[in-house]
Image 1 (cartoon, one colour):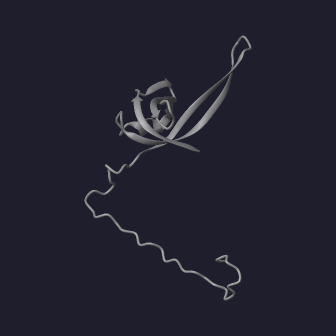
Image 2: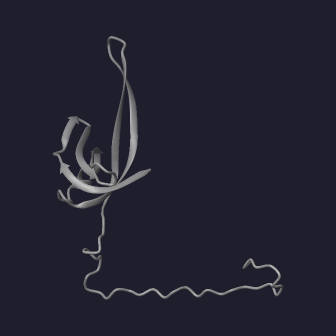
Image 3: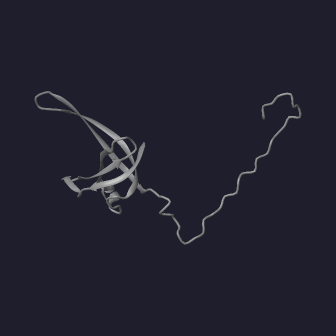
Length: 127
């Protein structure tokens, strides 16, 4: 399982490839390196609608699997193909988009740190 966070660049219409197979592609912009990378993902079957609630420009996290296959041409040539198949998409929460805008923020108390001692202080290690 892999995941990546980026900006939704484009989403395309669903394609009915055969009677029993449908797919939908979308492009994610990955800005984590010096140059932006435009990565095409594929959604298949009942997952084609996962990208529907998102708009171009939204920050999303995509969970995906890498798929590879071999194809042998009638002439005998062998070719290999890769697909990046998304299976889950979720929005990325930023400071400008708090999850619960109406409720006050919950505070978390600092953990209680207790020092344990064996009674013999000749060793300076805390355990």
